[in-house]
Amino acid sequence: MPVRLVSARGRQAASSAPTDWDTAVRELVDRVAAIAPPGRIDLAVNNVSSLGADEAATIGEQVRAELAKRHFRLSGAQEPDADLTVTISEGSEGYVIVAEVRRGTGEQARRDERVAMVSVPRAAKKAAPSGGVSLAQTRVWEQPGAILDFALPAAANGAPPETIVLERGRIAFYTRQQDQWQLSQAVTIQPTRSWLRTDQGHIDISQGLAAGTAGVPGIQCKGDFTNPQTIHCGFVSQDTQNWMRGDAAVPKDLDIGGDTASVGLTCDGRQVVLATGKGDWTQPDFVQAYEVDTTGRATAILTGSPVAFAGPVTSLWTTGASGVARAVVHNLKTGNYEAWVVTASCGR
Image (cartoon, rainbow, N blue to C red; front, side, top):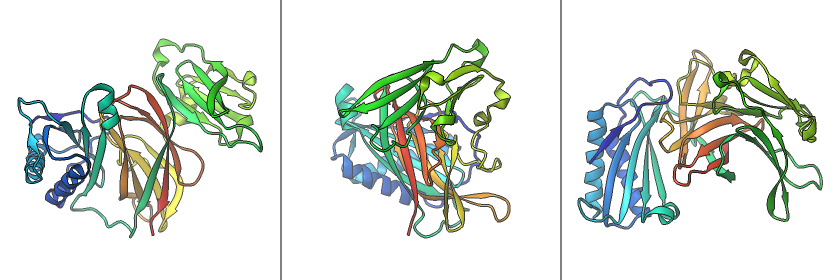
């Protein structure tokens, strides 16, 4: 059974053994059995956490043993009934194991894909408040071309819904007409200097559409976003683009994921922060909630269950609404880019 070690995209977290891998693996395989009937499977285990290869291999053997107990058989040279990929990732307070089950090939495999996930706290984990933080995910947009960021303006009375998508080279304005999204206008962003090229971008309509901004590294676009003809783009110093330094509301000494966003929500007196995983751009990803305790040195408490995605989360920003973030995902199965809204709520 292969174990593929993949370099992390974020800072390396300190390795700390979790309390009980046995329980986590049993729970994961129970969930796999609920979404895939027993049969021949092709099993692969990927480790994108700070665990060593030996630890990851041991977890892989536990997965193999639990699968056998539930009458799954490794396919070997025979054609498998399904492919099972288990990925071990982590945040600062614990680990996450994601199982992807795919049957068939091509488009059929994409349609039949199922995902199961469990969280594994470390032994030193600080207890989370009862109920934790619940996350929900909603896909609001999908397209073949790269999405750098997006915005969903509040519709005026009687006006059709709108979506603003920041792409490579343009800001696209879409309007929903008769249940179909149509491109209404687009603002061209001239190609950047070669040393400024990067797949990053940010839309900010927090001060209202009339004072909207959008930017990529080294270029800033400003104007009335209700009237795109007024938007002008020009070169600026990257030092003036505060968005490139991340969410200023998240304490800088926290190491809780790849990208982070504070969502303006407080649960039991703690600030809620969302964070992506630390895998590289070739791996499925997730968004996990943390509660930040700032009474002393800022500490992050992993809380609730993560939400999974079929590819890396390439952008994560707060929307300005309490408990709501926007995430851009590059779906590795379809190749498309997806815009998602992730909503956090305090548990009861």
